[in-house]
Length: 244
Image 1: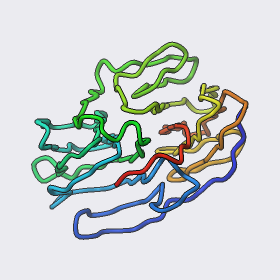
Image 2: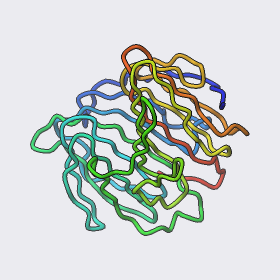
Image 3: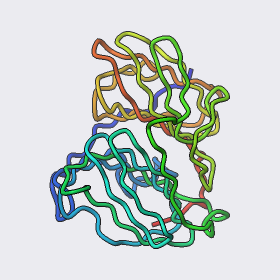
Image 4: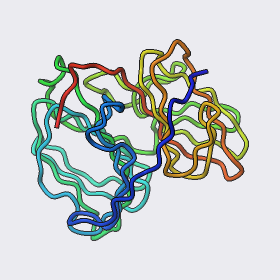
C-alpha cells in the first residue's frame, strides 16, 4: 500500500470580492503539490468569477451543492447542478466565467492542474460530466465515480490533455477500499465529508493526505463511523509543467 507523507488542514481564507466563503486545500506556490496548482472550495452567491483568462492548465469543477452557471469564449455554456462536474482545458488560452445560477448559492470544488509543455498548445474547450450516467466502479461498501483516468478497467468520461486520474469515492461507515493509483503519480485524497483513514493516517473533513510516487500501486481508504466522501487525484510530477 502507498504510504502517506503528510496530512494538511485547509486554509480558511474566508470571504473576498468574488465569493462568500473559501477554503484552500491546495495552496498556490507550493512546489510539493505539482502538478496540482490549486484546489479551492468556494461558496458563491454574487458576483462569483466573472470573465477571466487561463492558459496552460486544466480545471476540474465539482458542484457540491446549488447550481453553477458557466460560459467561455470557445463556445461552451451551461448550468451544472449538484453532483455535476466539468473538465475544462485552457490549453493555448480560454476566457470564461463561473457564477452562481440565479443568485445561488453554489458550493463548489475546483482543482487546477498544470499542463506539460507538450500539451500547452491543446485546443481550449470544456467537457460537462453530468452526475447521471458517469462511469462508476462498485465495490463492497464503496463506490468510485471516475471523472478521469481508468480504475480497474472503468474509464472516466473526461478526456484530459495530459494524463491524470480524478475520482470521487463514497465509502460506507467502517468499509474499506484499496484504490489503484499509478505508481509514478503524486496523489492526494481530500476528505470532503465524514472522516477516514488514508494509507493508515487519520484524516478528518477538510483535510488532505498526500502520497509521493512509490512502487506501491494502491491507496487504502477506510471510512470512519460516519462514512466518508473523498476527492482523490493523481498525476505525474513533471518539471516541464507550467500554467496560469
